[in-house]
Image 1: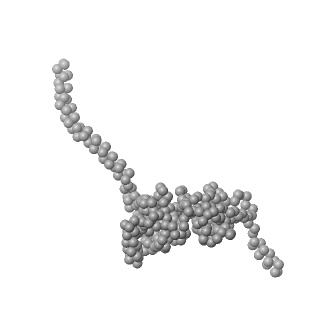
Image 2: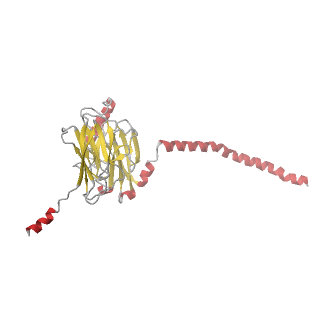
Image 3: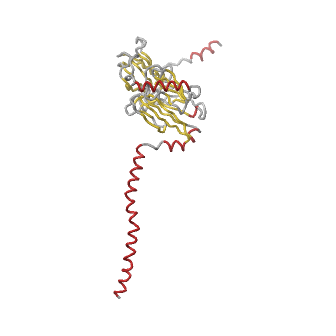
Length: 338
């Protein structure tokens, strides 16, 4: 009986196909992500990839941040943000596959998001006194009203740490030049957390996987900025409501309000500094988004064309009268001819 009982336990050990690779990076901030068009993970979660600090690399030289706490980025849609304080330094890339998998190991791509950084080095020059005063006043006002504002949105902000605010209020301080490293959204009223999802912009054309309401998206305390965001509704909330976003960036760019379902990022890919998230009725959102400079210019041009045509319309009655006067002679001519 004991031998029979032990046999099934022995079958619980499965030898996987695994491969380990050392990736050497220079100093800077990098995004490691899956190449497009690969085989998706199966029921067992394989194939998959784990990114970690390479053995022998001193602590503090390389920091790895992934959407899973253990460095796992799966077989598709995952990504890792890697900060190398002093290069060259290595990270360990380990791939895992099922033992009988006929597919090649997952393929990765690397994009550099920023150059070398140091913990004490500010990302941008110190803000001007006016900007500093505005930031201090805004922070003081936020602290005073903290009890009155819901905590729908949480974020980790450079030099400030963890901050909360409500939908309809600014997350971060426009003009402060302190970037946002990550955020989460969980509305307390009106919209169930299960009806909202969002992404962080990691680089040009690169977005994090979708995070569901309440999940943290980005990094915390790693000096790794996100470059923008995207927020959308689903379920019954999407039938009657829309997301509207306004954002500022550390290079002074200000965008919005725009439809939140499109990624909001600066053309320069400057770090995200602050954003205002609003959830409005669909009709109100549709009416509020269009007023931008281009449509106004178009309406002025249209008005100009209308004004140009106006003189022609004003001459029309005179032309009619002129036609009416010679009409009588025309009737008399046939009479004289006969």
